[in-house]
Image (cartoon, rainbow, N blue to C red; front, side, top):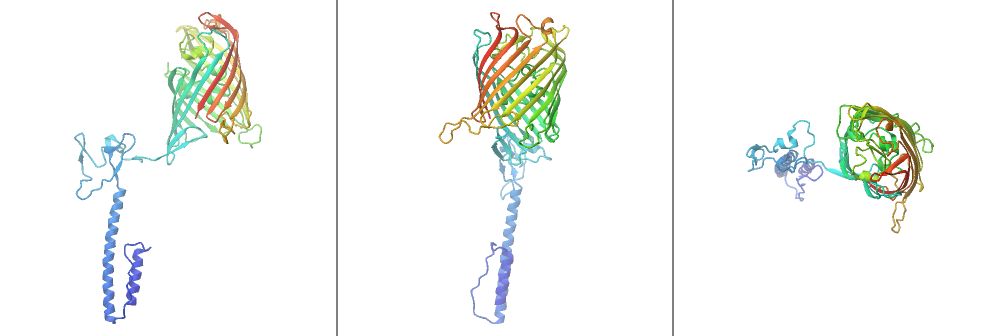
Length: 548
């Protein structure tokens, strides 16, 4: 009796492990002592019962194993899939009375297997397709690099959305100008879509409304397997001039760039570029080949421009209090052989290069003042060689920028005219200082210590920055003597002073207040209907900017 109880208890523990087994413990009530023969028979009976229970547990385990196998071999019902997204899962394991796994007639009269039609879904690839069905996403806001985003759990695939809009009021002191006029304008509204198709392969697609036109802005792939050498192909900002390539338009001290950068920047073009950072981020470089025409959506010929950019930060990794830690020096070049319509066709005080003539009805002609317009039959033909040397310095709330530019462009009258090399030179110096205590290491948007807020307990006025700039651009007088432009209407030498004040309500909202004074070497037409001219221009500029 006692031996039978011990054997039964030990067998139960061996089968149940943690007491959760479906075999209940045998808790026999105490009995009176019986003769040995009866005790032996009772022990045999109890062992038979335990064998029966063990068989029952074995059958239950086999049933569980079959169900686990069914869950592991779930097949997707491809007929319910949304193209490009995936399909809803369903169990497709044979059941009693079912036909799972057998060919079924399709809606089109053909047949399909239980996995769906492979010619209409991602399952068409049988080898190498690691992702079948849906992947879960996580969402975020990137406060450092801006934008709302979504990514897979492993961050291999991402999509981020950023946006910029600028709304402004321009008021010129000169009265009765034409076509330039006072008014409200939208110089830029942009939407950026960017992310990764696996971490090393980055993409960007963006679109821009400029005054009254809507166009593609960027469209490229960037291969980043090593930060020291990356490869970019598509349409994007070209590596010429520090102010253009290195500083985003929403980071500018003044509402627009200096005279040389506005009129002779590389702009956005289609091309192939190698770029990266080396020497522990102390040197940035970029070199590429691009279509020749600035801001072009098509190549006008097979000729290419070569552009290169170098920026050296010798003390970038020094201690925080080292005064020269954020000193930048470097240069860039743009060289090629051209044969195309001129861009810019008109040089302006504060507008990016454009092929639009001075008599264009575009809103840009109403917003910005021209100071030199090439004659209608002029073409860019012959060699182009432009260069810039730059310096930048950031220390606490201080920004200092400067560049010296030069080189030449080649122009000709008509398709058969002889090319004429026109030397070009310019320079600018600019400064800004943040008054409210915020510090920077590069041009960026300011995140105020006390963002603008009038609510009780949240009160703040934002951040304030004062700015000033002088810029100058000069084309050799050969631009007149060779018949490329009319000296009675235009000037080949312009100087410009900007004095301004920037108010950062928060990191996303910025307001520019700017006074821009332009001085012309010769009187410039400010009313093309009456040929009235002036030697000066004064613009009072208020710009609201939202970027996130």
